Image (cartoon, rainbow, N blue to C red; front, side, top):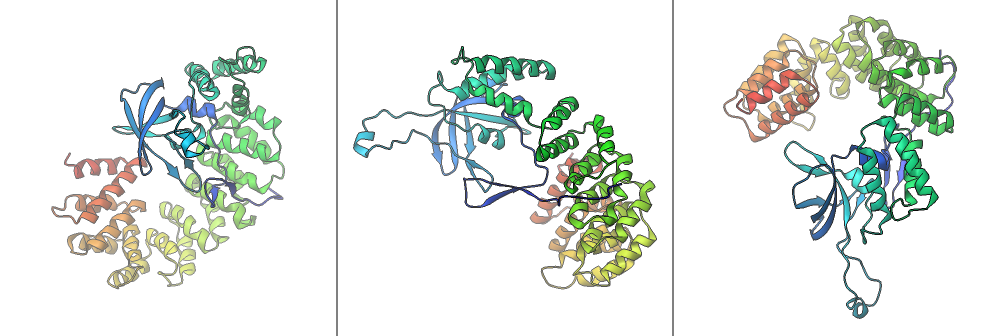
Length: 465
């Protein structure tokens, strides 16, 4: 039983010098080490910039350092956001007066580019390239280039324990300083950072070792790594942790662990505390309940719903759409209180539960003008009722292309089992507005990417398959 919570959940905020804006990352953000970037890269090339138009930089490939890449040139875009500052200079900038600078030979840098495969081409891995975005002026003496070559060699072993042993040996040699032109001292910090950083792909034993060596904030990062890595061996570790009071910000990683591993026992253990937790603490637990609970957990979900405010209830309603409950429908109906437009998130959930009042409202509201008109079509898309399905067929057969676009968008997130028949009807339309065609394709793409096989079949039909 969680009897006391010490610290409220917050967001991790990092200030980058690239812009005047703060860059905010979601709670539990973990960042790959330099070695992780090298290990996970499909292709690493050493490339020389030969031209720039706006933010687009044309590179000539000088060397393929990892993977297989046959093109001689590659175009990459600079990125300037609150979180990323990826810049490629074409020449060394002189600080001398112009008449003296003109007498000095121009030097062109080279860059390490990390590439990842797309369906039919290659794209720049922004995070990895930015992490090592240092101009290489001299290939023979560049410490960063020498270090990357060594780390690529180790990563190619494709054996976790063997790589770890070799990294430690590489660190020992680099620290000795005996062969700096082959084993630069910069390797020491790169390897230390990797071995000490809690990242999801490390083994359970390594993460537990890091946990024991970490201070309070570091321990929490280990919990996130265990959660995101889906380390099922951590079940007993988390179970023992819940035998004593825990900091409130541990609820986030424990909830993520439950989602990743679908651990029903832990869900019951921590989920029964939902009604007594404050909102900021129970928000991640709410998602664990929604994504992991099943029909056996109706009592747990009802207790959560009864203690929820309108915002939470709007999310929790998604679970009750999948597992209908008359009492839950009544609770959500009371929260909406007929204000369907103002409480639209709750309205969608209520529609999914099969409430007829939502469909009656949508039938009238869909014919009104205004920026919120889309809500009516989403409501119709969410509802499994016969009347909603009849309205959907009328929309598909009608001339309101904007309304049809809203209906398609609503089907994308809906649990309505009838949506596949209606999406099929839309696919088979002989004449479709360009916006309808665009959103139909985008919606089916998203559904397919989320593992929906019926959406994949509709995609093939749309493409003429």
